[in-house]
Image (cartoon, rainbow, N blue to C red; front, side, top):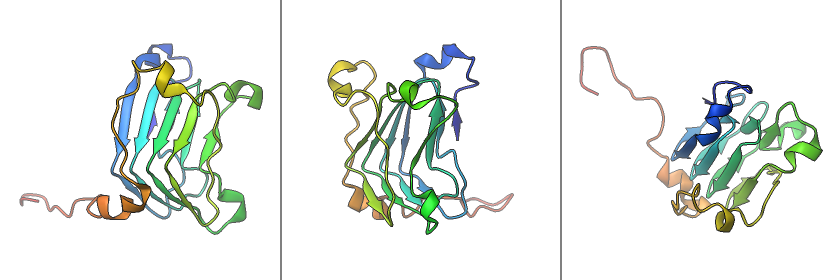
Amino acid sequence: MLFGASDSSSIDQVMQITLAFNHFGKRLVQRMPRCRWGYIHVVNNDYTHWNMYAIGGSMHPTIITQGNRFIAPPDIFKKQVTKREYNPELVWMQWTWRSEGNLFMNGAYFTESGDPDWSKKHKDFYDGISAAPAEDVTWMTRFAGVLACKPGKPC
């Protein structure tokens, strides 16, 4: 999932997205999501391995992750959940990327940055959706995924 048209499309600064109740399974590579600009709330999703990164971004998006489960792949070089694109650390450390109540398994880790008090200072962005405990994500996403529909027949 790619949110934001391009790095030069600053109009996307007003974008607000909530990504909830998805299962991102094995063999996915990246962009679960990849964000340019805007505010992205990633809540109660199940991430089962990734080949490059799970959540990435450029152009200082605000990314808040709450109540997700991240199971890292076995490769020791692919444990990090996050990836910041095209910017040095001095720049991306100013971006607000927060991890709250997530469950990290098999060595997965999330590199936080920016303002730890984001929700108090940015109430206009915060959608207020309360995350369920990350331990419940497997149950909550058990029916997520591709529908088994056939053309010409009801799903």
